[in-house]
Image 1 (cartoon, rainbow, N blue to C red):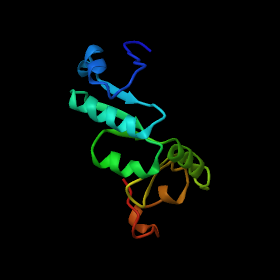
Image 2 (image 1 turned 180 degrees about the horizontal axis):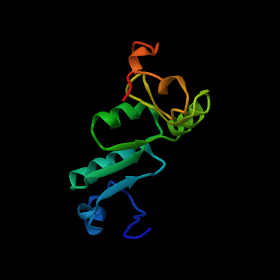
Image 3 (image 1 turned 90 degrees about the horizontal axis):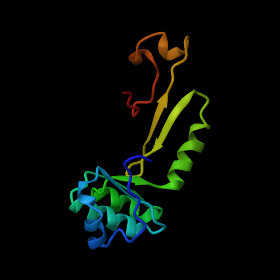
Amino acid sequence: LENTLVINGDGRNLDLLKDEGIGKTDAFIAVTGNSEVNILACQLAKKMGVKKTVAEVENMDYIDLAENIGIGTIINKKLIAASYIYRHTFKANVSYVKCLTATDADVLELIAQNGSKITRGTLKELDLPKDMNIG
């Protein structure tokens, strides 16, 4: 990786982060095996001026907390795997699925095939569920 600094240390160590010039970086990614450490490290990086932070949060109980305190992007291997598997359960050509953690909703990206029902008229003519949003 070009222009990338990998720090093998405690992301909660303020002196370490200052010495490495973390405040001048574009992004900070915390991917230790400990959800709490990753959340705290991202909070500290945000406080030091990093605009984009990413935390691996494997403890499902902490995902909502991490999202609500605004640390940035949350990565959870279980949800990524579930989204990938879920994508293959559809009969349609689904290119992307995102399982949202803070709500009871899923986001799907579907590719409309030539001649499919959705390409032959307007959306309001289709019999879609009332709680479905299309964007």
